[in-house]
Amino acid sequence: MNRDFARSCMSSTDIGKLTVNDLKEDSRIIEPDTSISKVIGALREWGVYQVFTQIGDKVGMISMRDLLKVTNITTRKTSSTITFVPKLDSNQSVKSVAGIMERYRVRALPIVEDNEIIGQINTVSIVKAMNRNYLKKFKINSIMTSNPIVLGVNDQVTKARKIMIRRRIDHIPIMEDKRLEGVTTSSQIVFRMLPSESVETGAVGAEKQNRLDFPLKRILDVPPVTCEVEDSIANILEEMLRRRATCAVSSLWGEVQGIATFRDFLKLVSAEKSRLEIPIYIVGLPDDPFEAEATRDKFLRAVSGLKKVFPEIIEARSIIKTKSIRNDRRRYEVRTILKTPYDIFAYTEGGYDLPSVYDVISDRMKRRMAQRPRRKKKTSTRKLEE
Image (cartoon, helix red, strand yellow):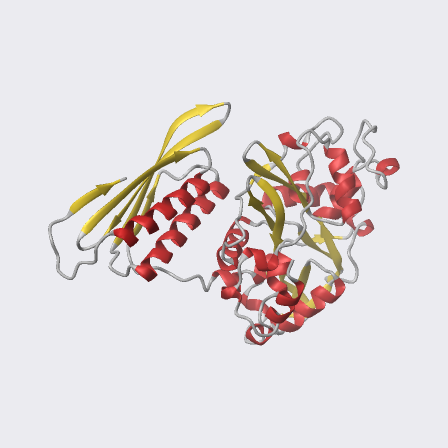
């Protein structure tokens, strides 16, 4: 990570001017055949929430929330548990990445160059780079998740685990006699799944998980970061960073009203995402939400860049077709059409990785439109196919 640049961003630089490369962090990578018990041990040793792995040309992530679902940590392998995520390039806008993280509830995404993971960008690095004067304008109730699920100190850990899996959350406030006693996190539960004799070393010889039928009061983060619903976001962020906390619990007259994580801070970034004032259509996006989001973002950024140089563009369309499936790999054929008052420009490209296909199409669109003659008057429409 460019530390000097990031520090300057904290007080003065607009987050919209940053790229992924400006906030790059080191990433932790494991092999696909690593056992889940060893992954948990590694996560504890490294003090991280997620790790990445690479299978062919795809990058997968395994997080604490993924690990909560595993019932047998000694026999399951990483490859059976991972979630495939979008691959970022170094020049991608931080604003677009923040939108992906916020919508799909992830804390980090991998940066890939020449099909190799070279780092990551995470929620903490983005939040650290946000302008503090800008944050002072907002109160915590503008971003927090209201009315969070709460449990009692005597509720069982198994109950918290089931709720986290079902609701896709990582934090639950824990109460006693209407007082906030602490917060239970997915990390605390996952580490208790590891047999005690292997917690420190990450050994994989144990045959059973630890049972989670003990009360939540034994695994609380205390005291948690707390605030009032009208408190400034800037002050709360500084307290979370100072204490290395992953959430803040807000209250009103002593009662819990909401919870905010670093991912919630990203709402302030993604909400500012610029919008194009022309119709843009994408048909045939893949079912995988991460791949679909990365594809959509690539296309929108490509059209946005072209629109600045060629304002005469009045419509953009992209049609994605799946041509073949081999060993769970889909080959895509993408046809993209740009319309101006004078011409229709059509481009077709194929490949296995949709964001990479759109990179190629973007380059072709720029070259072709830069070469075509400028027209001052409307003439007959013609079609250009490369």
